Image (cartoon, rainbow, N blue to C red; front, side):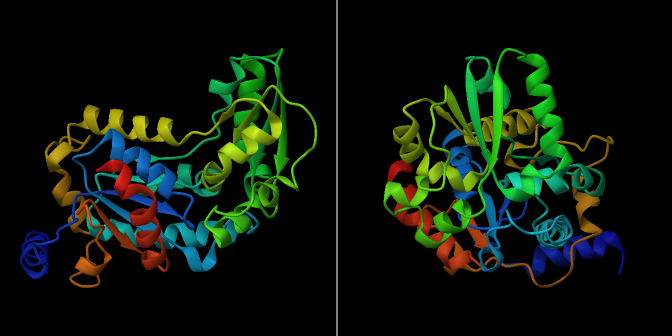
Length: 297
């Protein structure tokens, strides 16, 4: 089948309502990335989003690098079927192991999630950096830490791998007692705390109360970076050109199958802005509705 015919067939075969093709896609192993989604919805209220949650295998933080790569690449390939404007890795572990490779694999922007070391470091002092075990052991994180220490030589960044915290948050939806989330953390004073996992934002207040210091997460910064990239490429509302000078439509059509694209209304949020896919689509949709929709409306 010719590319032009494939594109035409894709347009006619898919339901027009709801239609989430040319949306911004987000990926996380579970509920953590919903924090990033909420920030994106607030900063980009007119955009539509596809949220892929791999909750059945969540969290990724203690998985070996090769397993993380396999799961993330599988999700990314699925999300290409929606012809995304951009793919947001709303997962620090996925970013650490996969962002660089994904940049070279796809024509659309890849936006990662990073521990905000540089933003926190400018305040000085001694900071605790909470990350997953897999992120902690990655060269990506080591490089980020070296950069922060070079820019702020007087600041002490103390990385700490949390082996169980993301799993506890995923299992309890972040609604357990404060002690449940802080009992395994280092019991000492810090000038600031950096959250290096999107799951950890659910217990940001508990961590801030435990340490009595500022706590920083990168969720809003990720959303603002997405907004800047979309604006610079002029692809809001599905318009614009690809960086190679041609229309983006042709770049996506070669990877789109004629089936398996999920536009099911039952998986769309009540505000009509988010389509939930992946193994955790029901859980993530319910969590989004109960936690975020009321505050956005």
